[in-house]
Image 1 (tube, rainbow, N blue to C red):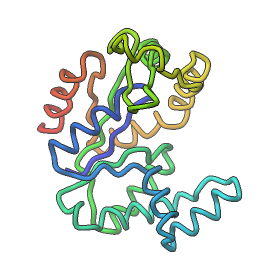
Image 2 (tube, rainbow, N blue to C red):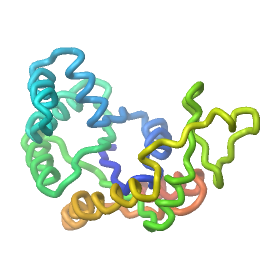
Image 3 (tube, rainbow, N blue to C red):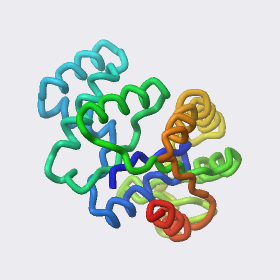
Image 4 (cartoon, rainbow, N blue to C red):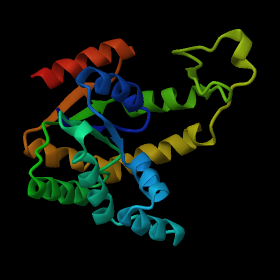
Length: 209
């Protein structure tokens, strides 16, 4: 299964990605993690990316796509992969599609987790993280135990203003990739409202079709 996971901030992509890669036994390829690893390893593409980042510039799309092609050519991607974090714009989607086609790879699905904006804000603003264990709680949906509540941290980017900005950016920059993949016939829309187990069932059912 070769797939891309898409959705607005707070849609639950992280939770569902962990479950899907376990179900399909495929690697989770996060563009951010991949970039950091390439820089640390000092690969040719990693050095190019490092130059851009040190200059305060965005890493060129062709460098990111080159890294993706290198990554999906590794043995653990033989049965598929899940891309997360790229593409973020329609031009990136078009460039990635052309590069994958040229390299002989074809995507099986682009999965879109859909959640209303108002619920995204509620989910994000209610998040709290435990600095000692890394566990993420939610004041409404997954309340923390009383003995850890006092040490939980509310991230600065989980305020109403910050979340609204991230959602607006998603709609203006990332949402346009949806019709691109819809036209290709590989987009699968999944309702992201509900408990995690129910959403996982919807995702696996959509991917089985």
